[in-house]
Image (cartoon, rainbow, N blue to C red; front, side):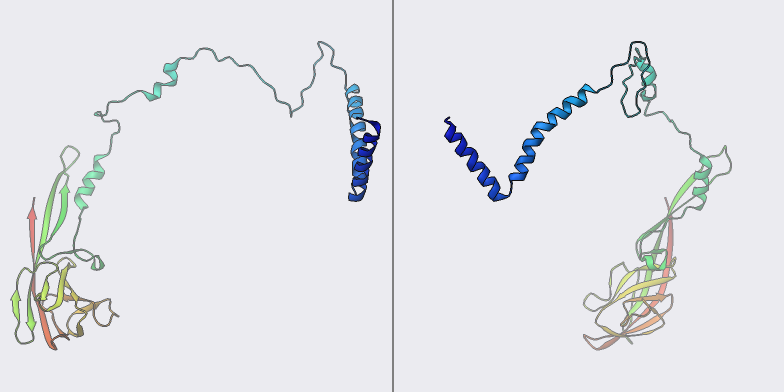
Length: 255
């Protein structure tokens, strides 16, 4: 390249840097490119000489030391002794039989019905109970399962014309499917009370029963004990229907 072209290119470069305000920066970069290699070379020449042979040299804590370790050949049976296979049909844990004996004496399981009143059972459903006992360490525990059933007998119908219905099934409509004033839900409090779902078409309830929840209006769930009578006004036909709990019969079957 000719000298006048090189001079023109250099002059254009300086002119652009001056217009953009970058001429001082370019000058600093040129100086740094010259000075930095000189500083690096001088610092390398001033490095401390290596320690003479036989002299101990302290290693700073920040440096990493590699230590050679040769564990040798280890016995694999010692490492895998805890992983030996076990017989699945052999009992490996011995439990206590005294707790099971005490459980057999006190266990009582109740199912069915409404949980809001404690233990309950249905009209034709069953309530299984488990009982047992032990006479000593040398005697076997005998567990016997008993099923308890309840049969509800009621008199229901229009006031002055009641009809007796025996062994009412759970979820049965009372007095009939065509006039569903009540729905039998189940037996509560160990056979002491019967629970009924009241139709939304009933506008008034009066008698010896109680409603759940107590502050509900109109009554949602009607609870009647043995011998209790309740009157309900059914809006679709404008009649007053009456229900009386005649009896709740308990039957225990052993298995």
